[in-house]
Length: 155
Image (tube, rainbow, N blue to C red; front, side, top):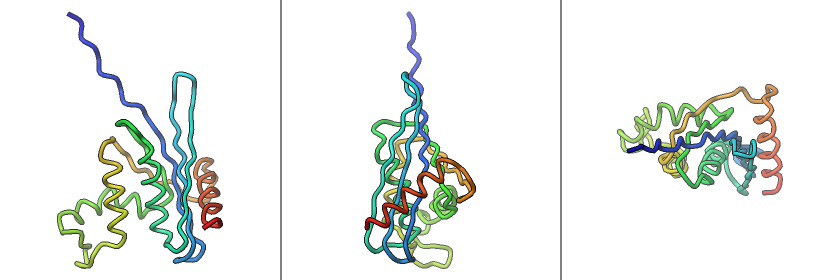
């Protein structure tokens, strides 16, 4: 009897960024999904905007927007220049959940709605959040930075 090896989930890289023209002000976000296919690399760029928002909300929405496009469980590298998103998902969220969505000062967590949405969007996947320095020549980060600013200008 032969056993079939389970398929390895695909690796997807999501490069994401948020932008706000003023803080608060009109905002935009962008996520670039990159994966390997049988036919070579494939990518998809998605953007969105909001008339009145904050930069942190757009950073969160960029990661959510990218993850929500995935239709089956994947191994995902979310690459962002937002320490807020990386630290939030790597460490803060665990304590927020234990403390009833209250922060270390016992105040309600800001942007709870988006943290919940990001946690839910990440749940079906194996996600690694990685920080890159913004405006430092990282090609994909520069690309999503521009797309997010253009989306904010359309808000």
